[in-house]
Length: 255
Image 1 (tube, rainbow, N blue to C red):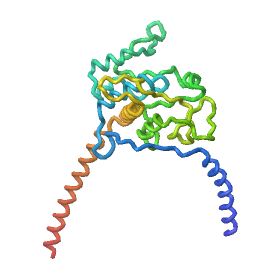
Image 2: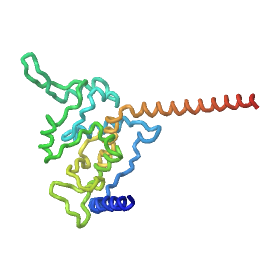
Image 3: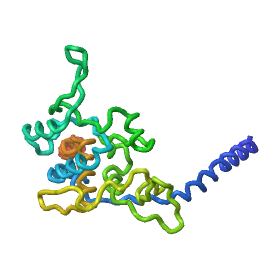
Image 4: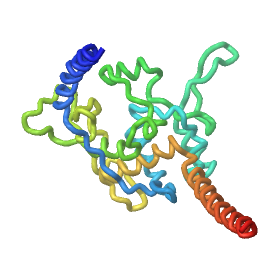
């Protein structure tokens, strides 16, 4: 039995060692810890940042990435009026139908519609992006371990490849990507999106704002959840003090 256990362990090590060696050459991804306003137990969303992030998404990210789980009317939650939401939605046309003649037709988007996808379907998206399907961004900050920090780090992580590292044609070096190689070209550049509130129009600011917006898209209930958590902790703390006082009173009579 003992001999069998040794042989099994040796076999596992034989399989594991090549895998570990292969991973050594992929590079270490660097994730930046960004001081987002919504971090921490009392964190809240910065509505100005959310609106700027929406601008970055609409003008840059939406060319390839969908936001299928968010409806235009949800934008009221980040400070837009119903009239503004209607105007934003009206800038897009979506396919609807069939009509009375059984045909599909295009119409202006309504606040109740979800964000229009840049491609008709996943096949079209894959074909237009060199065989790679751009991920939907609705839940990207929940799907990645480092959340908003991951999004920010990817968007700001493009750099020249280290000396001796060969990057295949159509690929790019990125310090935050696992393996340091990414298919998506740098999407942001200084001055790419015009901010009207005087905020710096630089890559790091764009990345921070769009990461904030995508966090809200994935967790619109974040502020409510944190507020409820604080209330629960306060209630339990007060309840614990009361119960301790009652316990002291009961045992005082016993003694």
